[in-house]
Length: 434
Ligand SMILES: *Cc1c(COP(=O)(O)O)cnc(C)c1O
Image (cartoon, rainbow, N blue to C red; front, side):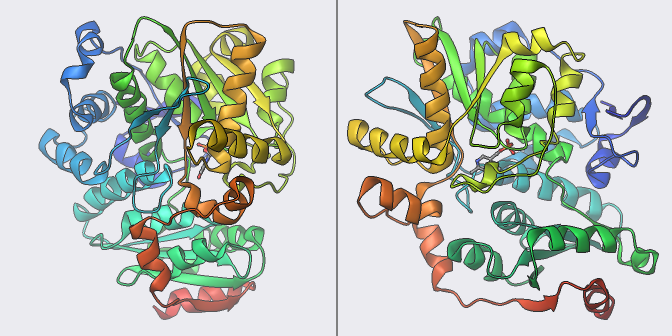
């Protein structure tokens, strides 16, 4: 399978090039030249297969022989080593697809673990160490750090803004050893991003073989397709129409769902649920994309004012806004509504949802009620474990949230980080000294 850049349809790249570059040199995002439809039997008989088998079948369609099937299978078994259960609620009768059972309690573990193992495989074949630099405002950094932990031939430095990530997030970022280094920058998230960009384009650092584990990497998108099929496998009555609500920020999760549908997965409609960062909902209603600066909210992993995967969505639908509208509805919700939703879901179902999932709940409910839909399957993608947003959730439900063991363990470890200023020469000196 070949890949092209959204900025240039005529040049084709291998899977390896697309993965190792992350972003195309012309600034575009990589897309597969073809999205194959899965065999009808496979979808009809999907309940016969395990999550790993489903994942392999999908991955093969994109990766073909670029990775030997035996190796691809072991990458998948190792990366997708946690479940994605579909949990029914009572009132209303929605279901929650829990995507937070990985190491860092966020759905980003799917993408980060698969990307890390894929890059690890390509690095092993090249005899050249890779040094990855990542800027994070919280969630992405820990998923990437844990994803690459102990991968031979790859070192990861994570830059995060001092005092601007939550206590839990900081512990997750700073308590790994071996090939992971946390760098605390005396500055903002934007400073961290600027420093990473400066290092990447610095010719003095060329021999360091720097790379960024970018969130738009095609190797992060592909594994997100897997769990939409795993979701469908678990739907009890497959004859009903289904409505899938995706809490969205950079639109990677939604894009993966749209690709799953294009591969033949029967999904009636996607609801892209947003916090106050409403650029995508405005695009769906007006057809005009007007990016702006992001606003801080309690569902902060979705605080995105210029969602990068929009170009992939436009590409999938040949820029036909009406075709996009027939598959996707989008709406934005305030923090106040989000807190109310957390409380309401807890009261009616005894189920604790995180702020991102709560936005998903609001989007689904609004769409179902406005269209007076009856006899359907409604699913919310729950993208993070509520313990990651303990303070907000506890305030909304008036009770304590239990912290899963894998998180509690890292909270007990000691923070280890290198402190640097936000001046580029300091980072450069540090990288050259390694
Ligand atoms: C990253 C993230 C999102 C947004 O996902 P996109 O693919 O960027 O739209 C939603 N919820 C959580 C918890 C996240 O970490």
